Image (tube, rainbow, N blue to C red):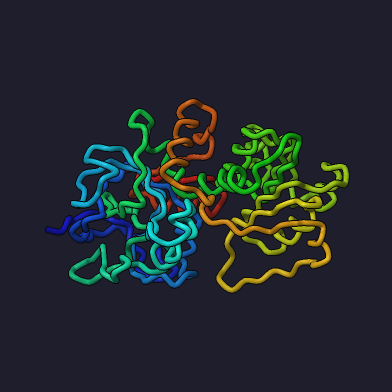
Length: 368
């Protein structure tokens, strides 16, 4: 028996989100039905909705869901009805990287999460009037009142923490925090530079503030975001609309360069500046994703001082241990995520999209 629910459907690339009744498929043995309480809006959702990625439209997006489990398939063991869950990406659970604790680098990550729109077996999770829609987005498609979720997307969390305060952990926050904790791992006295003070960048700033790094630099073009970055732990800020980034970073680091850089903007010019600003043996983490096929030119001799450029997906996090730890930090007030969040009723999804595009909202969270 299928479940009818209300979802935000994107009809075609560049079209707005429109609310419509859709049908969820029967939960498979390793799936659960989750009643959504909140879901974050991420630039990845907007990129797919614009037609910038080959995801099958019309479809239902959403990949920062949080809700309450209503029903589980016969083989699901990690959660039971009534559990509070944060939804994250899915993975096969069987390839070398999944088995090695790196599910963000699952062999089937792209089709399972970002571009397939179907389950691994090709079947559809969402339909409308008998016609399949693109779904299974990050194993969840959480822009809906009910979501059919892969077991490996489910992370059980502390029921005492309001779900609208932790929905963004599943993607944006996990990504920014993981860039710092899982890749850079700042040593005592080191310098961390964060390029872009959006949700991912500010998450990286908050994460850096919980490490022994002594210099934390936030870079953006909007003064109000840089002000917030300071309040969240940045020790220096650079307004790239007013100052040359290379000169500013050379001044802050006394010419030594940055030990770690997190690039969140997806702008290859900014990425190049970040690599050039690295210290010897410094590491730049590439987080921001430009359109598929984008290339960047680097100074090869400049890399020979032991510089590292590392790509990153979703913080390279093992979600079932990482996300509950972040929830605990939010609960204890040590990861002040509420400073990034603006809430909107689900029906106002288009207003949330506009506010995000205009820079009015750093991390919109839709509530049900």
